[in-house]
Image (cartoon, rainbow, N blue to C red; front, side, top):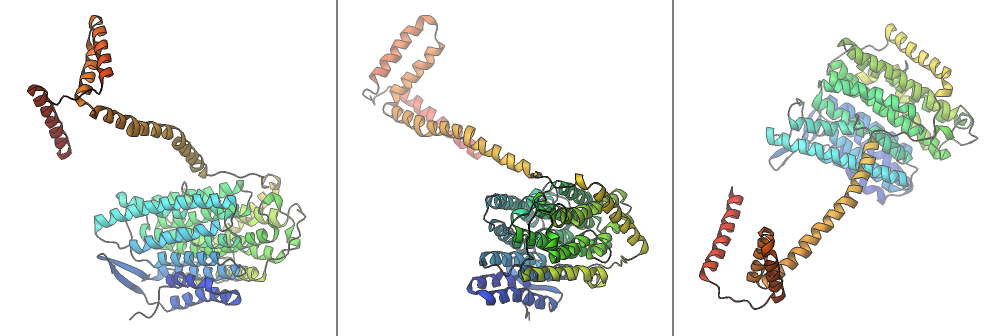
Length: 596
C-alpha cells in the first residue's frame, strides 16, 4: 500500500491554498511545502509508484531511482531557498506560479511515461511564463509572449514525437531511446529547446532578464535542468550531444562578453554551464553522466545564488546595467561576499562546488580522448571566471563609483543567499556529500595535485588578463541580439505578409466568392437558355473572322437587351437530350474523381 504522495503534487495541490492565507501564515506555509516534499523524498521507496491505466496505457507518476532522486533532492532544496528569498512578496500570484512551476518540474523528474511527462512539461511552460509577465513592463510582456510561443513550438515537437513513438512501439514508457527515426528526432528537439541548446537558446537570454526579481531565481533552477534530466534518461550516449554541448558552453561565454545587463550576463552563463551537462550526456560514460548530474545539482545552487545577488542589486537600486552601477561594495558588503561565493563556485575554484562537479565532465572528455572537446570546455571555464567571477562583480560593486548608496536587501533575501552559499561551500569542501547521491557507479577524486594546479593556472592567468584588459572589458550601453533576431524580424515579416499581400488576396477571393459568383448564378438562373445562347455567341465571336464579327456582336447585344425575357420551356427534343447527357457526364466525372 502506498502511503506517500508524489512530491510534485504537494506543490501543485498546495498552490491552490496560497491565496487563502495571509501574512505570516502564508510565509510559513510557503516554507512548509518544500519541507513536506523533502520529507516525502527521504521516505520514498525505489520502484514505480502511483501507476494508473489511461486508455489502455500505463501511466507512472512516480518512478523512483537514484537518477530521479538526485534531481528531486536539489529541486526541493531550490524550492526552499527560492521561497525564502521571495516570502516578502505580497502578490500571491507569483507564489502560486512558482509552486506550480516547482511541482510540474518534479512531475517531469518522476514521470515514468511520456504522457505524464508531457502534461507536466506543459504546466511547467505556462506557469514559468507568469513569472516573466508578473514584472508588468512592456519588455517583460513581449519577452513572455516570445518565451511562451517558443515553448509551445517545442511542446508540439515533443507531442508529435510522442504520438509517432507510441504508434510505432505501442508503449508510452519513457526510457533510454535510440536516435533513429522521426519520433526520436522530434522528441530530442523538444528536449533540446528546453535545454537552451543553440540555435534554440535565445528564449532564455531574452526572457530571464525581464522576469521578476524572485521569478528569475526560480527560472534559473528548473527548466534547463529538467531538460538535462530527460536527456540523461532518454538520450545518454547520443554522440551528437557531445558537440552540441561543447559549442553551447563556448557560445554562452562569447555572448556574455557583449552583455551589459547583469541578469542577461548570468543568463548566458546558464547556457554555457548547461552545455557542460549536455556534453556529459553525449559522452555517456558513467563518469560523464555522474558529472552531468552532479553539475546540474551544483549549478542550481550557485546559479540561484548568483541570480539572488543580482536580484538584490536590482531590488535595492532599481538598476541592472553594468554601465549604471559601481561602488556598491561600500553599502552592500554582505551581498558582495555571498555573490562572490557563487562566482567562485561557477568558476570551479578549489573548495567550491563547481570544482568538484564540472571537472568530472572535463575529465570524462579527456579519458575518452576527445581532445578538442576537452579544450573547448577548458577554455569556456576560463571565460566563465572572466565574466561571472570578475567582470560582473567588478563593474557592479567596484569600478567607477556610480554614487548609488543602496542598503542591504531584506533579511529573508540574505538568509536565502546564505543557505545557498553554505551549500556551495559544503559541497566544495566535502564532495562526498554530493557524490554519495550520484546515480551511476564511478569513482572520482577531484582534489589531486594535477587538477588543483591546472585549475589555478587557468584561473589566475584569466584574472591577470582581466586586469590587463580592464578598459576593453567594460559594459557597453546597448542590448546585444542573439538568434532571437531571426524570429523577431521573421515575425514582423510574417505579419507584413499577412496584413498586406494576403489581405489583398483575401479581399479579391471574397469578392469573387461572395459577389461575382453569386450575382452571376442569380443572373444565369433567370433564363439559363438565354445565358447559354449569350455564352455560345461570345465564344463564337472569338473564333469568327472579321466579316462575321459585326453580325455576332449585334446578335449578342440584342440577346442581352432582351434578357431575361420569357423562358420558353418547350425546346427541341434534341437540345434537351444534349443538356441531360452533358449533366450526366459531369456527374459521372465528379463521382469518378472522388472514388479514384
